[in-house]
Length: 118
Length: 108
Image (cartoon, each protein chain N blue to C red):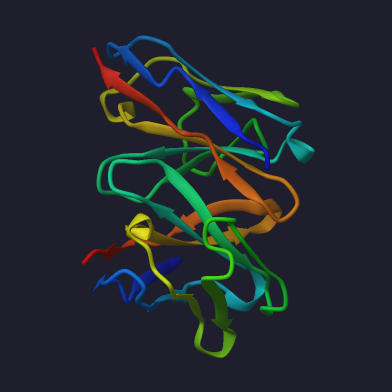
């Protein structure tokens, strides 16, 4: 059974930093692209970032480019999102998502809440 | 960026009725990489349809995806009580992924 478990969410002040983790199990982590998707309270889904199998290619939504960094440790089956210069509008539930064969997104984590507020 | 516009924003229907949800892209969706997700409050999204028309594993056949190019449709043939939720379309186009704003299917 595929499991994706996010951690690291917290209340942080504007301008602060936070690192999210997503521990994966039940599949060959190093074979799949991974994504972060976020959802502000009461709002829709927004794609945030993607990383390829070995971490050599990363892409970002314009809203987080230059502030967020996605990375992975395939030896530890873990995906990361380093967030810096956080803004109030970054407040959201963050989901990690497995991008399976043929770009099919079957597997999502349960989500972790990040709150940016003074 | 390929912007996805979903309509209507809210669909008020009764159990047993047919639901038709639309997703229109501002540019042609590459290789029909168009997916539909269902989300219930407090839960992660669930994949329903991928490749515009392929039902995901375990999804009942009352869910049908259709369309190509820039116009896509999700049809729920007969609404069951558990189908009342928010539905999102999503596309992949060359290292950029975008979601529609969602359609809320609510009980009338």
